[in-house]
Length: 147
Image 1 (tube, helix red, strand yellow):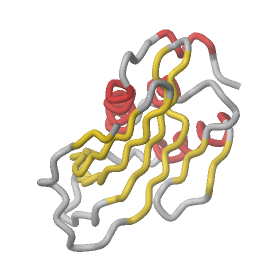
Image 2 (tube, one colour):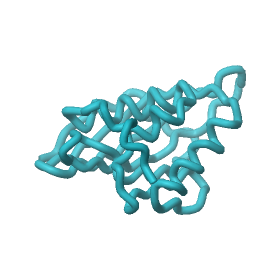
Image 3 (cartoon, rainbow, N blue to C red):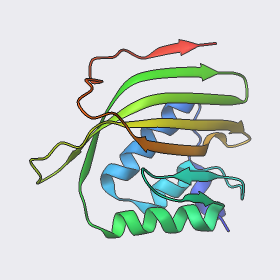
């Protein structure tokens, strides 16, 4: 079950929560990662090519395993499309990932992030990442918001 001391940060926008999410990945910081997630057993996380992780415990374990790999990842986000309402925000984007120390550049990852607004601000409800098409140039797409 979630540790209530982790949720002291209040994200006033879903974009703040998203920035914290990617910062946590780049630092391989499990506690910071889980502070971004909603304190809800209904959270869902799907990593590229991975199984559907449902619930706080499963999502935490999935990130723990990724961070235990010791890989340094850097992200350039592109093609962001935000569909935001009062209580829910859906973000569709591409992750252009660089693995520090490797020459090979993986193809972009196609992502849907869903955020929910509650008493502690915006929190992640769903992260679904899938391998994107190889050879596509997504780094120059500009963000746009759809209401």
